[in-house]
Image (cartoon, rainbow, N blue to C red; front, side):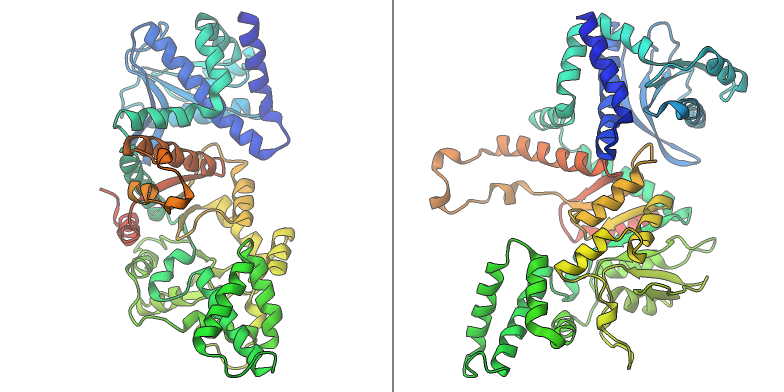
Length: 517
């Protein structure tokens, strides 16, 4: 068993050098989970308590320690902090320094006596001596561990080490299922409050960038993507009548039916459907798109847009919000900012200059305001609408919209509102930006799937009675489902702040501005 553990540990530590960034990031979380669970087992064998992911307040905002052993461990005096770092060899010493400085910030908050920094490689005697001479945390006993120390612990708990190595990819899911099965699945509410506090801290540091999706505008009467496609298909059917390809006597109801059936033919790819529509409408495409976009616009802005405008009002000592990125074509954000007298500049073309006192609103997929200035070409402002334009954006690393998003994701804290986080180009940019981050810095506001919706009956013809779920099992499955979503976006540098009703979004945005309770 000793040799088996050693081999597997060496493989885990060497995986940080994998060429695939996604694999390297997955290994980071796997390594962290492995170490935490191994230390928990070790502490329990000594009848010592061990707490992981301890979040604390400090003058620097909400900070986290990977773990704390209140009574110490293996002769290390308690309370002892544990910080885990997985880095490439040249940066190991730097990572150790940063970890010690991080612990020093919180040493008085939790009255720490010692700290253990755990790396994926052992520092040399010279490096350890250099750290000791720097005395980065006076009065705090510091140890720096690597594979050798972890190996010694693993050999004391061989069965646990083997199971952890074999089951690491599923460890988080198992924890979620256990929490649900024991009725402890309300942690997400506390975690959401913590994340809103982190976003408030970013806002106070003028470091916040909202990223907006369709969910922000739908309540204002802007159609969803599918609704927009349906309206454009109706316009295309009407054009077919005008061109003589369709009998002019076709009723409005029948045109709607034709449009719906044509849309079903394209359901496998919305972008392909958009290309199909653009080809059908020809030169009338942009006009039809503008008309469809604002045809059902409501006179009163929804609460989330009003809250977003309040968030963008500059603070006395800074801007609060650095910039806004929107994937929507509409100008509803700009309208709300005008009402709040916030100086702003929409950006939808390469080379647009933003004055220093203006808030940039980046329309990275294009911009179609309700009232466009005369003489301005609408078609030139559509960066992405159909398949070929999306492919062009995805394949052009030097596109202004890609560069803007990547810079903001790399340098600031993003909050994603009204987005599903499924867009391939956004996920690609997030993954690139996350490569040099030790921990996730961005937050996505996402709606949890409710037990009622999950348990909603399907038509009897689709499933036998024996396949019906009981509520306890459904709770357990949903817990695992939400945990897997968290895990998938965490690897992109994003944490999830959950909500259960879309009406909560405005309150969450206001909490970011005012500070979470």
